Length: 409
Ligand SMILES: C[S@@+](CC[C@H](N)C(=O)[O-])C[C@H]1O[C@@H](n2cnc3c(N)ncnc32)[C@H](O)[C@@H]1O
Image 1: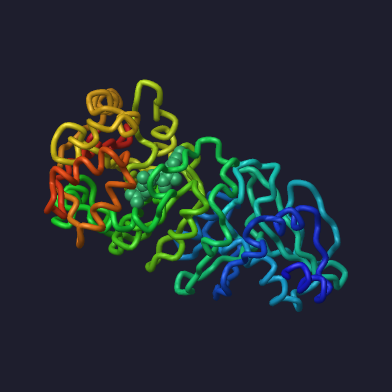
Image 2: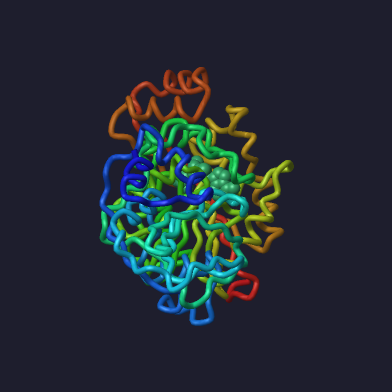
């Protein structure tokens, strides 16, 4: 459909653009129509007067309240801008952006720099082109290179979930471990998030540990983005998530958050650009067979001096949820407290215990969540032992780590 529209308008494609158009975003189960208000900014207009790498350009745009376009904006913008001025020359040279081009800023579809990162538009000798571009994360885009971003106020819904089937595009971030709960059933995980900490003891502790008011906060491994709108009083909210299926949900959350594809080990943000990082049940599960040092180093890179990482994990010793965890072999694989506490202590982090609860609206909701999180026999046996309840006590461990040069290091 998109190809036919482009061909009818006389748009020519290079091989990289062809490759991008083969992606699931342009498949037969294509996303519903969406509105994206596009703004053009040169790299220097974003404050990068000496030019910037792609992560720097995207971070500068995020700080300016701009967000990335869905990949599908490339062809749509090409068709909307058929009157784009012809480039002053028809030269293409390696390592330099073609003159008169507009790069459409979208989340890189792959960490592999051989795979085109996104589209750019150019008119050469009167012929409109839609082309794909490649670059790595150290290539510096010159100050006059122009990018198209989406304005925050626009209701951007990048992908429909139906257009992004489970299993699509999972193999391009090597460090991505699909979550065993949220990805399997995002609707039930939504119920779980809604049941969490209604008394706000955890939330109050998070504020106390490192207040994000008027600061830049990164929700690392933000999943479907449930918590992104809750950081509304931050200066800037950024969600980073490796799972394309979950990103699609995160992008549809209300609020101003910028959602980027990335992982703890590969955060697509500039050095020293973030004040607070939250990782909620994401990646940081220290275990004898898993050392999360690579992610910690990367968090240290993007945090400003004195910035704080706050990791939210389960307390496997205290509370009714801990009792369930201790009886579940699968959950134990995520790591036991003693090891996690020691690992964080060895990194200079401190650990705080917080007691809260899961409180559900209905017994059915509690049952659905326990069946998502635990083997059916274990969930059913716990439910049989607690026939009336719609709530259970839940202990959290909050690990707080500050950049080595920071105040509390
Ligand atoms: C249990 S979910 C929690 C999601 C979200 N933080 C929340 O609380 O709603 C775990 C998340 O970690 C993400 N994840 C997996 N591997 C990761 C990595 N290497 N770096 C960052 N996040 C990762 C998963 O895709 C998933 O979104």
